[in-house]
Amino acid sequence: MNTIPLPVLFLILGVLVLLSASFSSSETALMTLNRYRLKHLAGSGHRAAKRAEKLLQRPDRLIGIILLGNNFVNISASAVATIIALRLGGEGAIAAATGLLTLVILIFAEVAPKTLAALRPERVAFPASYVLGPLLKLLYPLVWLTNGMANGLLSLLGVRPEEGEPSALTREELRTVVNEAGAMIPRRHQRMLLSILDLDRATVDDIMVPRNEVVGIDLTDDWREIARQISESEYTRLPVFEGGIDHIRGILHVRRMLTAMLDGELTRERLLEHVRDPYFIPEGTPLHVQMINFQSQRRRIGLVVDEYGEFLGLATLEDILEEIVGEFTTDPAEAVRDIHPQPDGSYLAAGSASTRELKRLLNWDLAADGPKTLNGLILEHLETIPEPGTSLLIDGHPVTVLQTEENRVKVARLDHRVASAKAAKPQD
Image 1 (cartoon, one colour):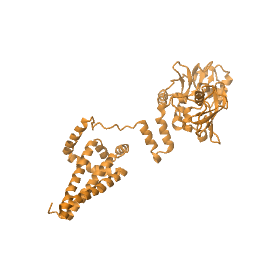
Image 2: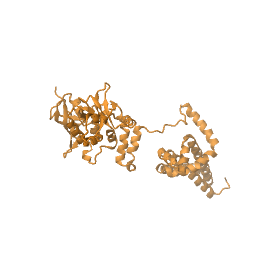
Image 3: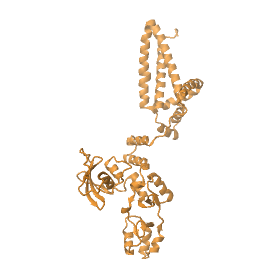
Image 4: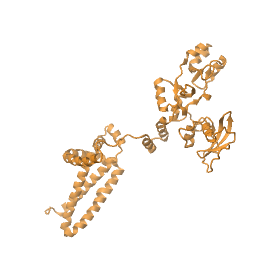
């Protein structure tokens, strides 16, 4: 070393600092790579991504080779700096050289390269993988020895490096990924993806048409009335019952009866030929399960029944799809069938409006296991059948009952603004 000129020693020191920066930046870059993007790139044939993915399969070996190289060049740089200090100022200059080298390595070999790698991980990690792969094979015995001792120490603490943390995302983590996608995923598509994730939180009870609102054909009606109902129906499929909605015979595809009507051959027997056996859905069935059931059964409509077989309502495939893509309408003001915005910012809502519609449109924080309709919410809060003009607070929002019908709320006014006053308790 005493025969090496000082300019060459400074050059060697500069190369060692550069190598230290390379090892430091490659470590940060490889560890901060987006694993899902990396898997996508590797699957699409990106060579550097394949190399990086292979290195990351055993992070203990990757860290071993990086730290082995980084410590070797740092110690070598310290030795070279010591020789330079001795030549320039004797033993008294060693302390100054140590402090100066520490500052140089901290800035140029640690902070700056690691910050760059964290901001541009792919630009650093992919080129580094071409060097680290062969270097790992070359120094594998030394890496194996150091990793063996380190892993033995970790095993005493109950940690097994080959059993890494599971990389699968939870539902909430996936929701965060979708929300943070920004411009990469259009906002409407984000809402659809989030709706799909929420399907298992909703059941057929949340989207079904309640039995008191089901429109169907009663075989005991006059045939002229049945013919009029078929010709003017806004629905493609109608339940057919006899003597009451609890006696359902099946489901009729209305369009199949139009030919018979035009030919004047509409009879009870002809109608019953086109009635398909009813398809029953147990109450509480999650929407994602029911969508699969509709597909496997080749059905588009089902009758929701309770544990005693009592008819509760009617659910359709369209209703489930609307939970994902929204209402099938081009008019945003009509996006929710039972809730209508008013010029003053309030909303007129039917008592049958579902709580899911309220949460989606007005962002109300309502319990998932509570009442399923606005009428149920009002009755739960008041514990009595209200008179028109009764006001209350639901989730901090003023609600005024405008119209009642027999034992239920028919129409109410909802104020989207949160009230500061406390809700009045119902009087005894």
